[in-house]
Amino acid sequence: MIKVHHLNQSRSTRVLWLLEELGLPYEVERHERDSATRLAPASLAKVHPLSKAPIIEHNGTILCESGAIMEYILDQAPDEHLRPEKGTKEYYQYLEWLHFAEGSLALPVITSLLMQMEQRDGTKAMDGYISKELKLDFSYIDKVLAKQRYFAGEQFCAADIMMTITLEIANSLNLLEGHANIARYLGDMQTREAYKKARAFG
Image (tube, rainbow, N blue to C red; front, side, top):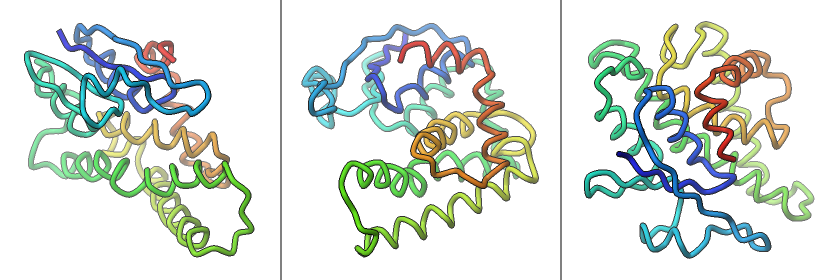
């Protein structure tokens, strides 16, 4: 059985959501952020040296990093309906968005979160860079979702799970104003039963 090390208020929700969508058995070990520093507890460092969530354990394998974990779990599933067939256009769209979520989008979104924790006058180089990246990323995402229901076409897949969690963080920071297609998409994702079950873990 897959063991998920789940940190509250973290992107480990992705892993729980995927497991729920696939109907695979799993167990959860909860870890709580320090109430003062908001940092991960020392208990995570005992599982993996990076002390970050998500982390999974399965048959002697310990993995950190959302994208790698998603691929590993999909490899364990007898039904690969959440990963398009290799070689198809949809498969390469899936790959692009699976990696885009952390490779391109997470940096400006998480940096925005950190920047909102301090007083800024908007004149520093980082402000301009992050603003430019967010505008470019959300414009691209919104245009894609104007043409298709999901990130890899018309079928829900694991890349949607990766993207939704990062987009939700952006939405909580009021970064998605004016992007109606992203708003529609998030509304659709949040109605999924597997999503609701994963969110119930906090």
